[in-house]
Image 1: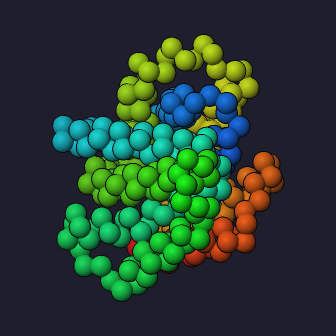
Image 2: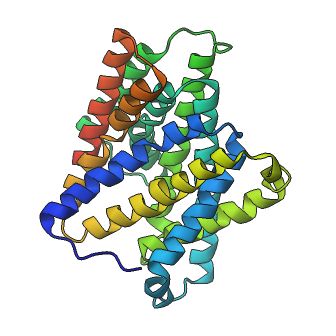
Length: 287
């Protein structure tokens, strides 16, 4: 299957659809009754199938990665696996809104880790991003009792954001010179091999309806969303793409409110607005 030829207008529309599909990730995690391990395994399985079907010929023409690149891809795949596991755990113990907002803290971690690991000077605007995210998280946190579901969910969401920041920095090294679709395929394949021994015993108990949600999660939120993102970047500036994808938490929270009645309080909305604004600023300054 080939990606259709895009115009600048259709590429912009495709980016919004991709951000929307990424925003649906938490919703599917809520709909699926299986545990996080099965959800991540299923997402990787159908993600691999979708990416392989869409880009088989394209990836076959790519040069083989070196041994060092292959090792880095495996390492980034393990990070992606941990990121997904903690995110879906956040959804299960909390709700979609707090999990999504906790994950949206990743720009602050990226700024701090980039300065620490790559010895890059942190600009004043980046310190402002960190401060906005921290203030937003304080407002979003329901209370300091981590035995409560919402607070524990937020904590797992923040861990997911930290792991995503580490993944983003690892990708700076691991996917350099590689096709991004091939890299995504390899990372999802790594997740399959990592989780297969643990997930195989649980698969017979998965409901038929859950398999449908897993197919949609893997195909739409991984295969199609990633394909739209990569194809759109051929015509849309990276700065514009980053700003559009900063809307992902907005889509996720909106769908959770409509489908599950997860109505955030005014304090959570204020904190979420600060985090999303910080993500917007980080996206603009990073491109």
